[in-house]
Structure formats: structure tokens, C-alpha cells
Amino acid sequence: MQSQRESWDETVPPDLVPAIKHLRDSFDTAHFHFGWPTTQLCYRRRHNGKLRLGTREIQQYLNVLPALQSRVGPGATHRFLTLLSKETPPAIFKGLFDLYMDGLKVQIHLIFSALLQIGMANSNQILQPPIEWAAALSRDLVKSQRHQISIWIKDVCDEHPWDPDEGTEEQIFWRKWQAPSFLIMEPSRYGIYDPQKAWERNDSETSSRWLNAFADDYILILDIELKQAAGTAALKRAMTPKVEKRAEELQMSQTFNVNGANARVNFGSIDNSMNVVHEGTPFLEIRKAIEEGIAEGIERTELLKTLAELEQAKDGRSASERYRSFIAAAADHMTILAPYLPTLGH
Image (tube, rainbow, N blue to C red; front, top):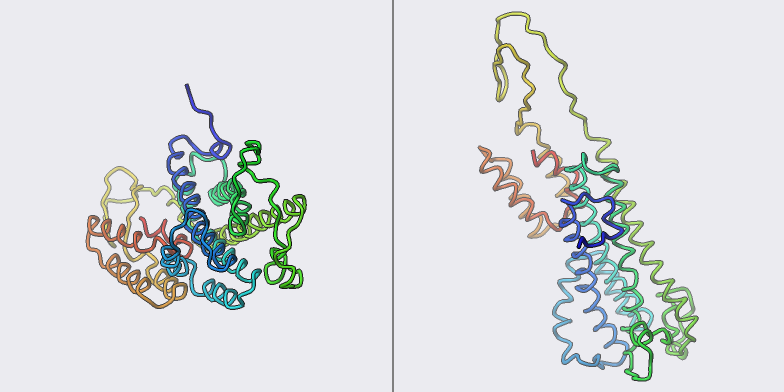
């Protein structure tokens, strides 16, 4: 029996479905890698050092925090630490929520870049322009995880007490949950911070409305990221010269002039082959993009090194091996390098 196709893969050719599923799984993984440590840390800070039920020690989550900060970059890390230093419930909540969101921003940029490359490589199979196709699939992915935001907010504030008399739906969705007022106090939202009222609870209807507002912001924030990524990709593509096929040439004489790299002599035929020459690869542009877009450090040094090795490749085999090394080193910076990969790949 054939499995039912999901809404997202209606525009995806069957042979590309495994790759798209892998990217969707990576977004779910990002929700967990950033969502669960921030849940634990926020709950502990909000409850005077108390750990969530079933959590034996907090150190493992403290240990992973530097890796999360490195992933989102120095700007987001500075904002995170500044908010935590205020030590008020809404500031701590916003600091860890923003760290969670910044991790998702990084991942959705990587996913969009990968989808764009897939779309460009398979443009003969898809019905939309590659940029629109990649953006639409990315937006669908973001929307599919909208429910994660409500779960995160409830989990950082409280633990759902087990009640055998509750119905299954309430046990799963916890619709009776009552939100503390600090969720809408500044700097989390625009309400004036009042420490006396920070933990006052609100009715279920109000709480549900607040949760929906946070989930809507999640969609809006990541949609802005995708619009920016799509716009940048469109701009890069518009600025990239198009290679036109040569007009058919008539053989006028038996005089053969052989010039240039990979030159050929053709008898009684037109040469429609394509020469790939190192001189056409924008190594200077790529090097400039790395130096301007990546902070000084080990990652930038390694990227520049692998790029130089690729540029010095003498044959197809060594070029292929060094290209793979460059792509592996560039995995975390696809938003910067994605526009150059089609040309570099040739």
C-alpha cells in the first residue's frame, strides 16, 4: 500500500524526497538541541535552582551552553548575556528564548541554502523557480514546528502535574495551563515590570492568547530571515553573468588556429563542448566574502587554507578531493558561500 504524501512534498519530485526529509529532520534536531538545554536552564533560573522532575544534574546543560553561543555568533551571544545579567524573570525568559530562536535562524538559513542548491541542480524537475521553491519549502517547515513554541514556554515555567482524572487531550495539550504575568513584562514584551506581580497567574483563555502571540512571532521572525535569504540569493543571481551558447560557426577554410586552454580541432563538426578553466573561478570574490563575513579565528583560517589548496589543484581528481574538503569546512557558513558554489562546483 502506497503511503500518503504529505502537503510539503507535493512540489518535490519523488527522487528528491529523501534529501528534503533529511533537511526537515535537521530542523527538528535544531529545535531539540537549542530547545531542551534552554528549557532546563530557564526552569532552573526561574525556580531558584530547582531542577525539573527527572533531571539529575544541570552541569550537562551548562557544558553545552558555550557550543550554542558559538553556533549563533558573537552578536547574539552578547544580547543573550546582557539579558541574563538583568536577573529579572522576564529578562531571563527572553534571553533564553532568544538564544533558542537564534539557533533556529542559523539552521533555517542553512536549510534554505541547501534547498536552493537542490532546486538549481534539478530545475528541470520542479515547477517553480529555484529560489521561490526553496523559500516555500522552508516556510512550510517553519510552520510545521509552530507547536514547539507553546510547549517550550509551558515547560520553562512549570511542570504538568499528573492527574489520572484528566482526559487524554488535556494530558497531552495542557489547555488549562495558566501563564505567569512576567511573560508579557519588559523586556520580554511591553508591560511594565512589576516584581510583585511577575508570578501572578492568568486565566486559561488569556494564557492561550499569549502562547499564540509567541508562536506567531516565531513564524514572523523566521519568515523575515527567509525573505532576506531569498532576496540575497536573487540579487546574487541577477548579478551573475549568464553564459550564452555560441552561435553556429561556419567552416570557411582549412586553416586551423589552436589557442587557449583545452583547445580542440574539429573536422566537419561544431565544437559544443565546454572548457572548464581555473581562471573563470571567482576565487578572489570567495576569499573576500570569507574575510568580510566570518570573524577572525580557527574557522576562517581553515576555510582560507582549504580554498587556497583548491585553487592550486592541478588535475580533476585532486580538485574534486579538495572541493569536498572545502565544502566540509564551509558547512556552517553556507549563507555566505552558497552563491558561489555552482561556479566553484564546475
